[in-house]
Picture (cartoon, rainbow, N blue to C red):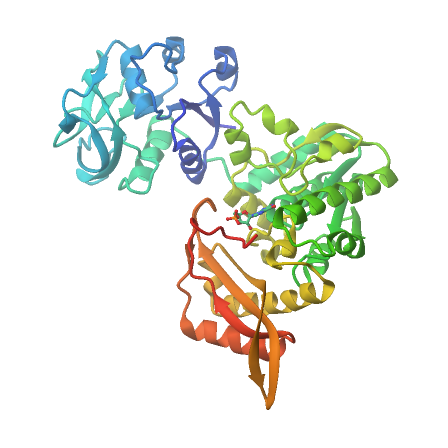
Length: 511
Ligand code: XMP
């Protein structure tokens, strides 16, 4: 399979570069600059991209690469730091920008030489996203200048004969107009990619690889019902069928019908599906506990205990499967840490379960690719496009102590909210939305009588990374409809509020 090698020099957009390349249907992997040359060469790429990075190339000890890489006959695209590094390694000179005007940050009007393969067919002028304090004072021999800005003469360089290209700006970010087209041109016009990376092909290859690796061994997977573990389960089910056991621990704090939905989704496969109804023991452990961290800890520990008991019944397994995805792998730096990292929903599992090896069939996929793969495997859309749901479930959306009655009340209210959001088509635009049962009761009037019931809070956010989030401006009419339905249909709630705080200072969940 054709592959692009992305050498990571520590820039903040490195994952984004990889996503863009894959969006262009070309497989790529991000490898740290410290990777041994032999390993990089064995990867056998059709093209190489050098990422940006926070350092200066002329500083002692700054990230670099063996110049031998330029003798492989493989095209290279250097981005920002990567561009400067290539220039320096090939005999050019990079210096700190002499005056502030040559330092460029943010959106910059850029003029392109549209005879250069990178910019062919694109407008000769456009906005690009710059972020560099260094400047290429002398470009290496054989290179031509292919783009400039009002303050910088060498925004892009190219040695087309050798297939070496460098850009000072970031084509991978949306702020750069036609950035994705430039990346596509590098892949298709320079590296002559054919565009072999599609989820259908990936699925077939992954299944073949899993069969080879697992052989006749037994595989165990903790299925949470979230997107990653569900898709991992479906892939393994397709690959090894009845050799797979999925353990789904229902802690009684799932959303309405969640357990049934997950079970139903896996019915088509001949696998061992163990659904553990652990509601009673979780609620017993949680009784009277109202401190959020304490709740989380109890749930995490109890989860492991249940899983451990179930896996003992199954006996020694050869492989423990996990739904680790590529961003976790890249963030761990070397890629090594992810092997021992436990799934965030079931922290610490590998220490407790008797197994020989870990399989992580999604470890090379981004979240949107995982969803695509899920569709290829025939998982229902409601599972594949599911919003994130925290491991501790409704426990951290019931403020104060948890009872079965409160969980049932919240489940119903949350279902109505999600139902109306989906009917209104808002579900596709929002990243997360749910109901919270507050611990506040207030006086209301229903029919002719007084009520003294709970206040329910609705939360809906937009976010790209869940690190920061904005509260969603959903239409008043929709809020009105949801509010009317909940107070009428759900016993125990007589007041609805809408959470209008962003993160920060609030968090997405209430606990
Ligand atoms: P916060 O509330 O910290 O949440 O803004 C950020 C995102 O993380 C999810 N979340 C969790 N996910 N286990 C998970 O798998 C957890 O314990 C957990 N706590 C929060 C939350 O739903 C949101 O998407």
